[in-house]
Image (cartoon, rainbow, N blue to C red; front, side, top):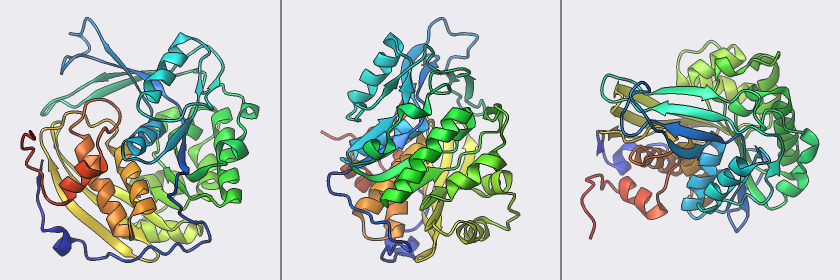
Length: 361
């Protein structure tokens, strides 16, 4: 993994002190970042085998929002994930899996019988990776909104994170998500979202255009691309900055729009740059990281937002937060599994320019 651009001091030209434009406060202390979303069992073929070749599958677990909680826990930020698991051994196995990575799962709701699945075939070179989902009618999709006491779940929270995948799963999931966001807003808790439009998930009778705007109104930070803005909000834009300015004008609670710009040279070789726009800092762009070879791309975006949240809670300005998130995302590509497993020191080593991968003794 080699950087392809100038030094941090030369490249980062928009570093300014972060001054939130609304009264929500950012307090790191010992409060928790709370995430909410579905977790699935991940079944991937060994190595780079095709589905047609595999005679066994490796079992792990993953979900975009829970990946954020794990990454933050590895960075020393207390985290809690809120979800609904089936009331059986699979649900409890998934709970145990995340607890061993330091995430608070004490408020998990157990209901229903089905844990969602996804199957992964890892690509290489010119052959892309493939994912097949099997999550219809899962316990999470059929959750009971009355089972979630968000005043209690967010009572010790310093941040709340969700993604656009959750309200796409079912009407119940969208209702619970809105309840969480309304509570976070009332309690003055900062909110981030990866709007993450997944066209094929919206199958329960409501469209993304009907549901998402009311949820996004509660956000302080959004991960959003020009394509997401067009598909979800009908915005015609001339580029990232134009899109971000339109988003901030449409959703006045929002402070920052962030994203990564990915150049896919092959399934094994990507280049990654963090970009952002905020009221106070204007446009920001980070180092470009040359990631080659990729070990596992899944969860790279989750590591990006986790690193950004860490930066917002612990660093002095918007650009530093964006830079930390981008370096954390690049480092995640070197780790198997859905979520990042690196320390603050390891990310800081990348930020300092040490990308040699030299053996440490």
